[in-house]
Length: 117
Image (cartoon, rainbow, N blue to C red; front, side):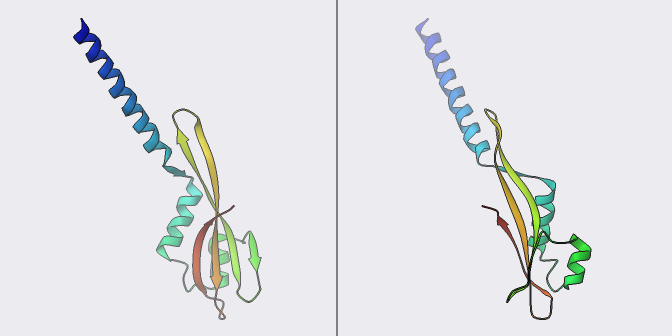
C-alpha cells in the first residue's frame, strides 16, 4: 500500500512540475497581431529602402506623425503584441511604431520598429 502512495505522490509531483514548466515557457511568448506581422516583415525585408516619400504614402497611407526637422521622419502604427497565459489570459499588451527616415533626396535610408513606452 505504501508503494502505491509513493507512486501516486511521485506522479503528482511530476505533473505539477510539468505544469509549471508549461506556464513558464508559454509566459515568455509574444503573440503579435496582423498589423505587427505585416510591418515587421516590411522592416525585416528592407523593402522600403530607397523608395521616395510619395511611394511610401501610396504604399502605407498618411503617417501618424511627420517630423520635418534636420532629418525627415515618418511614423506609422506597427501593431501590438500580447502575452498569453493559461491562468490570466492575455496580458502585457505592447504597442509598436514603424519609423521611416529619409535622406536629403527624400529617399528612405532607415526603417525601424520601436516599442511605444
